[in-house]
Length: 80
Image (cartoon, rainbow, N blue to C red; front, side, top):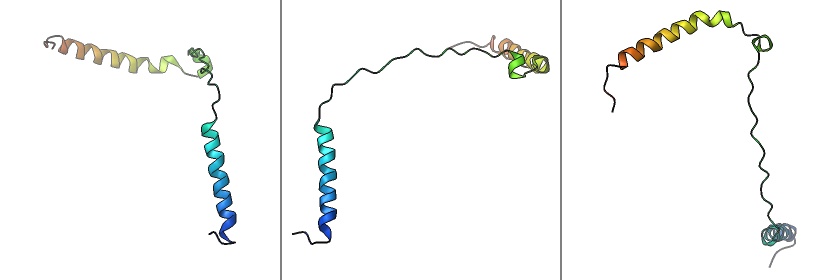
């Protein structure tokens, strides 16, 4: 038998349990999720993003020459 002190805690726990059970037992109609369109990424102009494309041209040429060297060295390898 609950004592006078534990009675409010027991009632609060019982009320919480009943609220949880009634929420699980209720059958609400499920609505299908709303499917939206994916946003399309649009590149920013260099003037807006404040990127100077000329500053990266040397690096771009270096990377392209590296890829060409790798491609030429791998072209003699047999593929699986």
